[in-house]
Image (tube, rainbow, N blue to C red; front, side, top):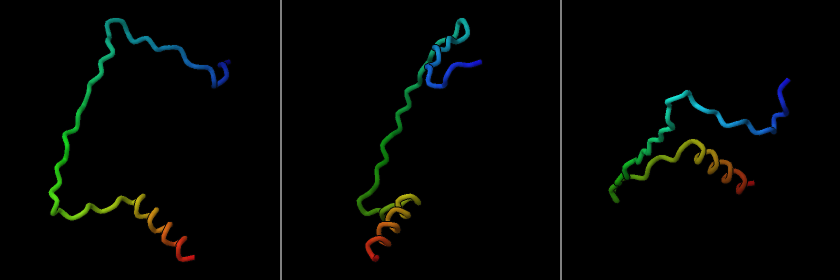
Length: 58
């Protein structure tokens, strides 16, 4: 039988000879012209705006 779920798990040791390797990925900056049109808001932002505008009308 296993222990309660709040018990922390022990550290997992990898196979012999394996190393923990971390790759640092840096995303380059995106330069947007001042004259460029504003990007379209994502779905969550559009829904939040619609919900808040419905509340103001009531």
